[in-house]
Image (cartoon, rainbow, N blue to C red; front, side, top):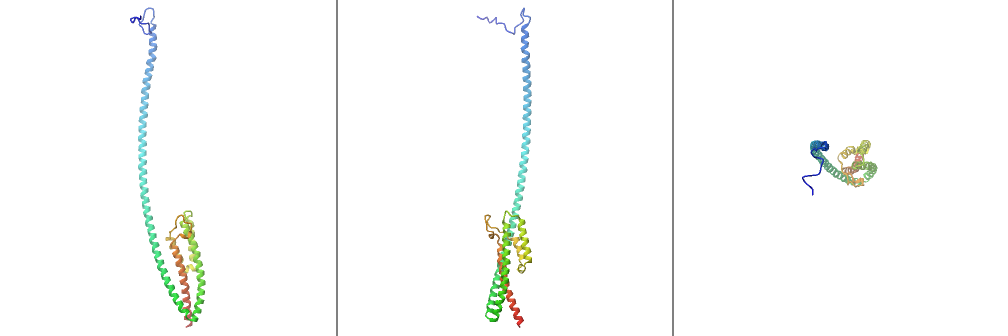
Length: 268
């Protein structure tokens, strides 16, 4: 059996006779590296903790800075958005007021044209009655027919002029309603119409230049966005075209009446 009081010889043993202290050398040879390794691990752990702590502090500072910048950007965006919304609401209110003004002006112009048309119709009926009276007399009837024929030729020429204006007005209104044509195209058409109205004798007699300016200012009616018929655009322009036609017919009979009255005066 093993004797526990007599263990085997290990490295760590007290000096014995005849051993020359060899056991102590081995003991210190292992102890010094172990102490060095422990010291290195302790120093490395401390440095790692410092680096982790420094990284954590830097991360928190960066996070706070980013959060502050985001909050400032958010507040700036909210402020700018509110300012934009307020500006758009103001512009919308202005546009509503402007549209209301245009609508009121258009209604007023329409009423005036309707009243003028009614007056022209009454004048026409009056002239028709006078015409019937003149037809009852033979010589007067012949004179009247000659004058009517002459003025009818003038009326035909005047109606051709109005048709030319109608064609260009349709193109002008199409340019106004189109999303593809630039406004310069419309301005060019309007300028040419005004020049023609100021130089064409029939247009001058009908005072078309002033009426055209009213159309350009107030006629903003456009048909549906999918509309392909140019003649469905515009509203005030069609009233004025009809008004000009009635004016031509009225002037024809007024010229006949003036000629007859002048002839009768000379005969007397």
